[in-house]
Length: 168
Image (cartoon, rainbow, N blue to C red; front, side, top):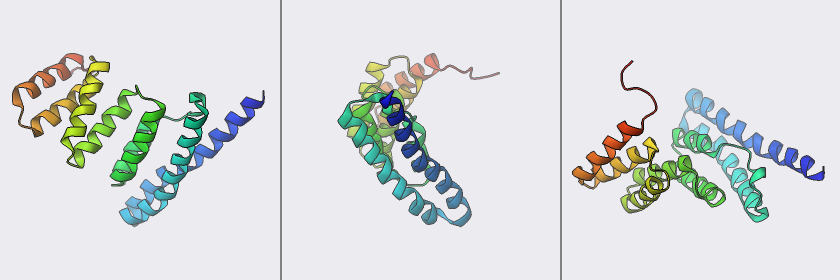
């Protein structure tokens, strides 16, 4: 029963920074991107601390949020370095999370680090061979490397594994 109380406290502590990141997006729209970034920065620090706590205790139950949307929100705020730092921490906790792997690969790609992006995309397509997003990310990296034949193959896999129809 003691663990139940602890779980609730951790959930409350991690929820506040998440609300701040959502609020930061609204502030960025209304007052400019720098105002949004200022609000989100504190939240990122708190989320990194939360990740450390979860990682030290080796208790994935305490990790009750979907980290991919947090990373996407930071990308929208043009906080790619923070998104990458947080994504890498999340990946330590969830090493086989395809959404996190794809987002980190995308961030490496945006930062111009094609080698890291390629390595993570390759790993993700091996672990999740039917994940269309993994193949899409791999295709983008291959296109940037002018490896057109292989990129074409990856694009075909995207079409093959896509869940939604192309045309209604």
